Image (cartoon, rainbow over all chains, first blue to last red):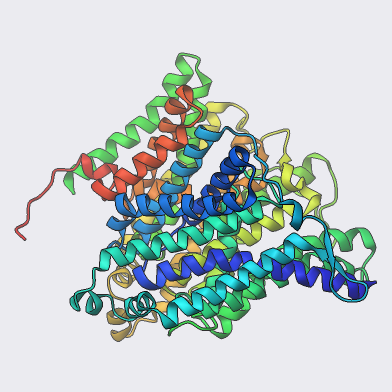
Length: 305
Length: 327
């Protein structure tokens, strides 16, 4: 029984990790190419979820809703990049942190204004409802498998984009030397807008997909944003490979830790206090993991030193 | 700079008179608001030492603010319920005496700052911002999931902690206790900034390599600044719990870290009195806009963005005579 539970939770962890990857890939790209810390990245997650919920309630189609989450977040990304973010690239980190913190206030309240304070719900499509037998005894939610599949698909897509296309060459060149690439006659501000919108749309897609499991509400983006920060710190800021490995690591540690740490502690302690201590430490586990990794490698697993 | 000094005197004058007016015209609400400004100002002054003067962009000062608050809350919770807090290595049932609570708060926040500093000062730049943020979040989640002290609902203490002779329940008296701490903190900070140690940590902000090359161990200097900074913010957290007679995990949340940062930036970075002005501005905005619209944070965000994009040097600079230098 425990092994089935373990396997199920492992899959849950991987599913959570793939969504974290969608968030952290954008964050790490934006930092790598433009040198910008974007606290407002969680807001695109929220905007994606709300665009999806809006379109789903108008058309009833989940797939159109996913498309809306991508484009809604991308449009918001382009507008915000052009009007605000663009002015921050040359500023120091402190200004960036504060301006994007202010953006969170602005966007969260803006969305609350438009959609009200009550959470919205997004339905899982008919053919992804229910469960699927994977191995002998193990059944698992189809929709969560779909999320894992989408996450891996996008990871592969990003890999091809970065390594095989012209845009990818420019992005990598931008990460290495910003001045040089603009000196070579590449329209750097267009490139920045594209990268920002790409990151925003990935976050938006993650928001819509998670929004279908949980609820779509204001402030949904911030908890996952902090986790995405932990991911990119673990993986090394600027590294997409680091973001992927860090995401899975954080997703699995968090999920498994919360479930199994209380169980594990029951071996040594009385059950009631094992549950409370276990769940408290379980919720801190990923931060402890991050601290440990930073002690060994201060610039993350795949970071440039 | 001369203008700033005059302005600082005005700030002090305001701090001494506003609550007295509140008292005379029987508007205790204004005393509470000004107390809040003073306490948040202390928290900001703490952060300003690390962030403004030494360039350590800590996005996790809520950890110290919250720790100070929780230590105060827990100590007096046990004292008021006369429940044993722990029986090893010595028996303790908490305390509701501020003279006992303050030293414990100071020691525990200094200790926490030492641990967080030791780990996070190994990193620089964005990593430092994010790792301080993550440590604060770690405490936040711990406070939420630890059921003994209210968990997510927070912890109420029914009586404000006491001092000998003085009646702390009186709003005006409590205000002057907070103001006393503000003056102490300002005095200490001013002494520090002008000391040789202060020169060292301000030089680190400008160029750490050069400071290293003259033989100063910059890691130790930064660690010490971080510890002092965290301790001051922790003390503010203790006063904040006493003001509200309530503590909840929300003071450990990252928005709190952001708000303390906003006090520093709005007032003007690396200005001794800046955080007080920033905190006052924040509270005024909250009170006035919050009266008109539920979405006051939208306007706060807008003001902040405009300030960062266009003003850049904080409110105090608007009052300061600009000296023109040729470019």
